[in-house]
Length: 77
Image 1 (tube, rainbow, N blue to C red):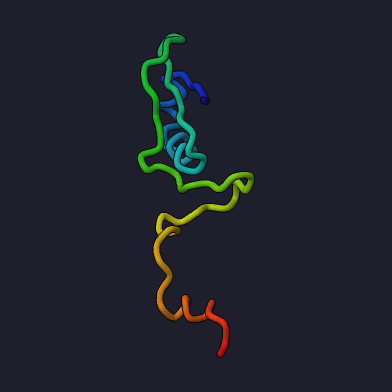
Image 2 (cartoon, rainbow, N blue to C red):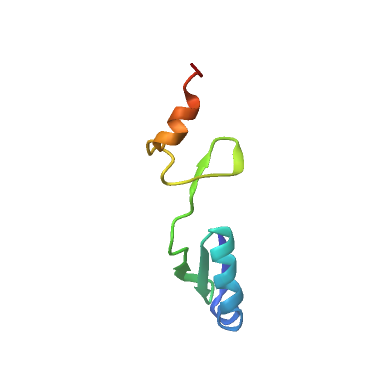
């Protein structure tokens, strides 16, 4: 977790917020070396699948397929 001083957080707040949003990693803000606050993402990041860090699994992954897609998986008669 990244740590910044309150002075740095004050001058770079917009950049810190953008970084937290982009990376999903929290940032600890300190005052005279003591941790006083943590800025963390408001929305949890998407589910990840195993060894594929770039692959994001949608929330509806487990939902049933629509009928036309199910039909495509049936053998042709």
